[in-house]
Length: 262
Image (cartoon, rainbow, N blue to C red):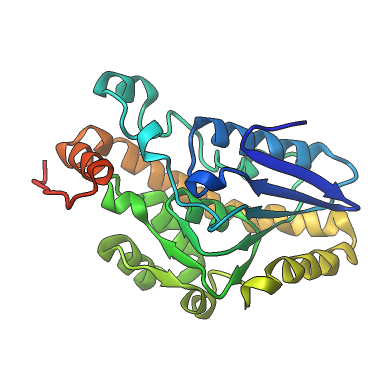
């Protein structure tokens, strides 16, 4: 299949799924969200593809949500959608929580992986990062909280680190992410894809059904934690607050926001 914002290619047993909106730093709009889901569904049912490598074109992996498309909507449209990203189920970004064949996915991340970009990286089973990689919870700066990201950071990196990530808005470097167990390997940027491909080859030497059994087990617990966090946060409807609207306007107008806790 051909996608507008994602590249899909298979070489041998490896499927390459690549975000392809480099002109806007692979920001997530509705089209990209749909394309990513469809590409991972294509991988899931492709009998010839046994492992996927997920990456991003251009200067960074993903700069998070497309603010102008998703967060500048009128209030009535926000209510109908149920938030900037719309009404969605847990793990909708990649769809790995509703897969059929449970094949392993390796993320190859460079530069910024923030907001939704961080979420997509954490949904993958294994993560290889370039030395310049940075994680950040940008939803916090937009007044949206990002509880689901806290849950993923807590699952992979530990509770205190996740609290600091979610409450102070700190950025997390590749080396700190490695030390916390949030990613598997850090390599120079020019070696990123080669390292991910080597990891894929290591997987391909193993019995595929046994690998998929372990993938299914590994994904389950994190999905449960994320689902609970999202259910709690969604009830707060932070996307209807004045602080959310102010943050979005300030971002577009390139100025410092003035928050009122309203």
